[in-house]
Length: 308
Image (tube, rainbow, N blue to C red):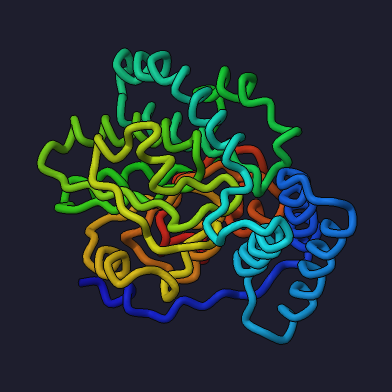
């Protein structure tokens, strides 16, 4: 077991650049939940108050987004598991599934199918309503060009070497819709490494458009590989706040593939060599963290990022 996995996970506070995104997310959640103006104001004021508290308390952006969702749910009078983005998540899953055969053919016809699968899975990370307002994302247009977006950082050789040695891969999922393209990559990994055990992890409760077990079942991910809840109720993976089962898997996995921005932000401080981050860089803050240009893709080994 890698000793790095035992380290306490430290969250480094909320960057000033993220404040406006958190407020935009609060406004978006209130809109999707059809809240009245006074209810929306309470949701936004609560988010602003938590941003202020984060200057003196260990609150991350993920904590505040969870608080926003809980406030929205309370304002609506719904049960704690209410899915604010249920309709748009379903639409994302259905739309992504409609492109699945097309991109499967690209992988099958590729001279480097594993790399093509990585490209498609990484580019699919555009389906993120936490980093972009849903109205600003033209999914049809984005999906048309998934295989054309460049990698700005590509730690492929270390990733392949890790797979060559691995017995178990933990695949930490991100968004609904996106998980369809994760399935294409997982299929290719299974084909190239038939003896590799693969476990996919999704969120415990609905949060923004992140994938839950319900989404995994809707697209068939659970029929492809063992799929579990990480226990995370956040748009990310705050390791001490996940289940014991997930923490044990995290500690014992030979290699881990972490998808998306929230997982990158929350797992990056671990600096774990077994972790590989696969995502699209969507904002200036992420560009600074990853040290690459916005709107490019990255496959980055976890123990090399901060020193690069």
